[in-house]
Every structure is written in C-alpha cells, then in structure tokens.
Length: 145
Length: 145
DNA sequence: TTTAAATTTATAAGCATTCTAAAAATGTAA
DNA sequence: TTACATTTTTAGAATGCTTATAAATTTAAA
Picture 1 (cartoon, rainbow over the protein chains, first blue to last red):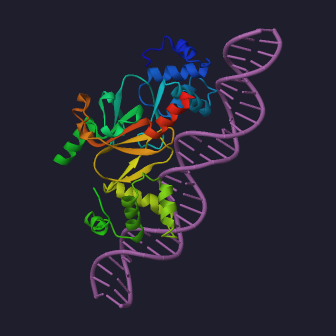
Picture 2: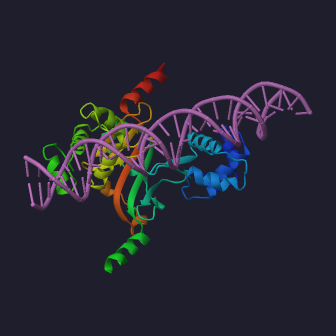
C-alpha cells in the first residue's frame, strides 16, 4: 500500500524489480493519479514525459506491478481494464449515466458466506452500478418537467 | 428471476420481447446450464440444435436479455464475459488455479457504505478470487512432499 | 568501461465483440 | 390463410484492446 512517491525506488528494489525509468514513471503516475486510468490513458499521459514510450511497455509494467501486488486491475464491464495503485480496502461504483468511477469505503474482509468455508479467499472486489449524485439529481429535474 | 423453462414464452411476451426460436433456445439454455458460459460456449452448444445460428445472434440476444433484466454478464477479469440467468442474490468466486467459477450465497443488499448515501445503487457484484477446496487441498499435499 | 542479461520499442498478430447489409422469419390485418 | 411491413437472423468484415515477436537499447555488476 503506497501513499507517496518518495520511496518508489526502494519499494521496487525491495520486491526485486529492476529499476527502469519507465517503471518508476508509471508507478509515480499511478500514485499521483487516483483516477482509475485505462492503459491507453496512462500511455497518452506518460508519452508527454517519455516520448519513446511504447504501449507494450505500459502493459508489461502494469502486469509486473500487478504480480508484485502493487497494482490492481479493475474489470467493471468495460471493454478496457482500468488500473489503480493498491491502497486500503474499498469498493467501486460506476455511474451508468456519466460513466465515472467512484471509490467508496468498505471493509471487504467483513463480507462472508458460509458457502466459502473451505475456500481460500485471496482477492475481493465489490462493484456497484447505478447513478451518482449529480446524475441522479439531473434525472429528477428532468422528470419534473 | 427464472427457475424453470415452462413459461419462458410468456416471460418474453410479458416484457415485450418478440418470440423467436433463437431467443427461446438461448433463454432455455441459460436456465438449464448454470455454468456461467461464455458467448462462445453458448454458440457452440446451441449450434448443435440450431445449425444456422450466428454468433451475432448470440450477442444480440444476450444484450437484449440483459436489458430486460433476465440475464447478468460477469466480467471477472477474463478476456471474455460470462453470462447467467438472474436468480437470487449471490456472489462469485473464481479459483485462480483451476479457473472454475463458483456461486456463493450472499445478501448483497446488506453491503453498505456511508460514502454511497447519495447514490442510487442499481446493480451489485461481488467477485472473490483464490483457491477452491480441491485446489487448496492439492496445494497442501504438494507442499508436504 | 565492458559485458551479459533484462527491458523497451515498433509492429504484427490474436481474439472477443460490434457493425453492416442482405436474407429470413415474425406477427398483424385483411 | 395470405399478404405485407417490420423485426430478427445471418455471414463476414471491421473495430479495438491486449499480447507476441524480434531487434535495439538500457541496466547493473564485474
């Protein structure tokens, strides 16, 4: 769980990931942009600083950071995956109107089912869909007409 | 929430979906095969009964049934979506070893977050990943050697 | 600085899904 | 039942995200 960009180098070294300019920049980007960016968004933004950047590197690095447990991929029914740096446990809400993605605080460890007594749970994702406050309000004003 | 195939015709007519052989067969297939099939699996299986079936029809019909609220699409980090007929509220567990998908009983209405007080929640998905009992056992036996 | 190994790059390839236009099926009204 | 307008199905092309490949570059240790 990474909160700041001060010790990204040390973090990569600790988990035995070779340092490269691209990897550090990508990790830094995810720490600074908690916007659930897609691979393409990351690519387009980082290209400004790293003109030679290749899309393959973005995907390679995202996979690497996922395996290292630093990054999480969200597949909340889009054709493209979205990525986030791993922080504290939280759920994701997608507004079906404006398509925005929201984090919400949720202790996923509390979610249990007797059916899973003999399973080993390693990862948990909670995805909700519906209308965000802004779109809900717009919807209500529309129907009042 | 559909439990049997007796009144599929009536169900489609009630929600104003025109009857077609393909639609009925696909709906019947999902009622009988609670295996979270992919579009391709549905296509290959139904082709046996409907030799002229096209993949576009499978996708068209799945989308139609989703909009009608009869079918749910699961995107639990596979490249391909998986589909299920809507039944009672439940979560999904994917074994990262054998790749099997398991349902588990869970009242998702109970999952709440104060952060969502002003949101309108319309759909909820809970995806867990880890090891199923069989793979967990195999894993333990392996490490005992 | 040298060198072997790992990483990055550009491009091609793969694959699930969507699009398109023509053919076939459906349902309504006579 | 029949005719007909509308909807659905079909086959194949197209799209778009992701992965694979092989050469060029970079990394890090000696």
